[in-house]
Image (tube, rainbow, N blue to C red; front, side, top):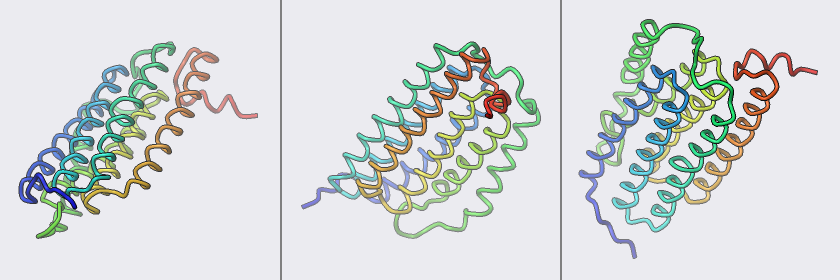
Amino acid sequence: MTTILLSAAAARGLLDTISVLLLAVVLCSLLVYQLDLAIALLAVQGGLLTAAAGIVALATGSGHGYLAAALTLAVKAIAVPVMLLWVLQRAPVRFEQQPVISRKLALPLAVGLILFSYFATGSLVAPEGYLTANTLPAAVAVLLLGFFTMLLRRKALSQIVALIAMENGLYLAAVIATRGLPLAVEMGVALDVLIAVAVMGWVSNYLGSTFQSLDVDRLRALRG
């Protein structure tokens, strides 16, 4: 027997707000050059996704939904940021010193991506479920902003943060579209994310210790 603790209307409103907040945090990450601050914002993203998963669990009364929310908290809000901070402590740099383009140009382009996301998906609002005016457009915008950030950054850690942001957008879209992912899928995604971050963190650490730089252009020198 399931116990629903939150009405569908309340859940829709809360998810709508969380989606906008997540989009704002990712947009801030695009404009941040300090690597430690970017990782902190990534932890905030994990917290918001945990809240989204928890709201879905409260609204559906699904037992595995609470486990999924706890798993999201453990992986996205705690484990991944801690792993990246560990790599950063051993890195020779703390700033993204040479972005591809400046903030003045990146900001209007990012706003353009957000507007495109709302234009492309804004009509997909379901009378039932959690596809509100902001949830799906914000999720798609987070995905696009993460990809855009990867294109702009030269440091490996910055690109890892951007890649996780892309995955966060996909995760939010999946949660709201399916009303909570199955626990097996949640566990598979969490394991994939942890393994990916661990491998990329190791590569970043090796890159820093070898070249005293986290610039991904140095990866070309590692070719056999």
